[in-house]
Length: 239
Image (cartoon, rainbow, N blue to C red):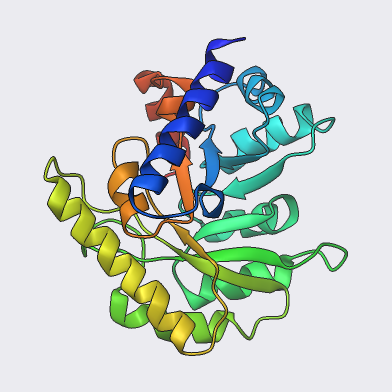
């Protein structure tokens, strides 16, 4: 067993334990492996351990991996900031887009989704702590955007996602996740059938699970620490 495969097994056990502690069914929580900056070989190792969903932040890097791994049955999620000049590639090559934060981007994804593919699954990104410079709509804007996306035929609105402000205060983290869950419930109550609450990463998954996360976006606990210099290169290439 490789390190990545052992990490996935340990992570699955940890998630199950946290869910049971909260009185939740572990089967209601899915694991999205965040593979940005890691090579296709690492994704293959994770796939051999049973992982089938992978999240990528950088379009061109992801497309190289998608081409390399065509022999594997992988569901690809785009989880990075969506630039208007990248929407066609996202619409044509991914099953999910997690960071939709405007009607303009949603409309472009809808119009550019190839008709022979099923609707693109969408999560609205909410800037839950109103951080300057972070993508996402406000809590007040989320319901209106959900209604507009829900009428686009080539998109399927599945849920919301958010990344709380970084803080060592675990109670504050939990409050942010609680606020995201409230928005999720509000949109469901409006008649839109959401089923995905995409929140929680390696450092804060305990708080996310306690507040109802249905999809965890986990990278470090699976693949290890990223090469920071390499990550900076990728970030600069998307500016």
